[in-house]
Image (tube, rainbow, N blue to C red; front, side):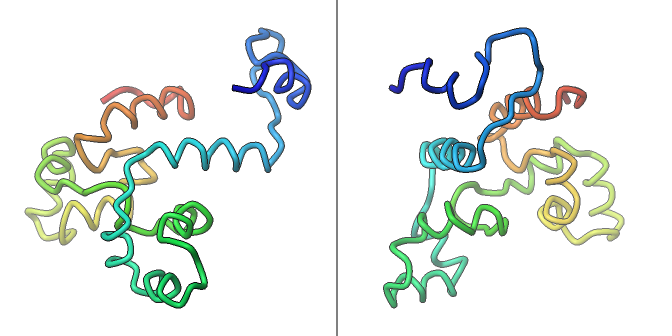
Length: 148
């Protein structure tokens, strides 16, 4: 673990200080921290490559090392599917009765379609396995979002 004094030197302030609510983080440090976090998350290499045949081909050709490498460097930002979570249709519809009604009325084809079109940007969780994590991220990134 690196000494906190080095982070304070880079950030220009102790993050525990009560003087500011926002600390600027250099882009490279932000990317490093995000990659470090994402590497701790479950990742299904085989499913990612199956869902993203262009990535599988690039891995096969040796253009990139792995699906995980692609996901960390590009796929996450492109919102590519297949590597990190499973969508739970039944659970999503139970958690979002408004979506369930829309599906029953034929206004939208499925909960998964709703999630991809709207649910992600509305902070709706795609599966019970991610529920706690979504609540934690909401608490930090969207303090005004009420718990469901």
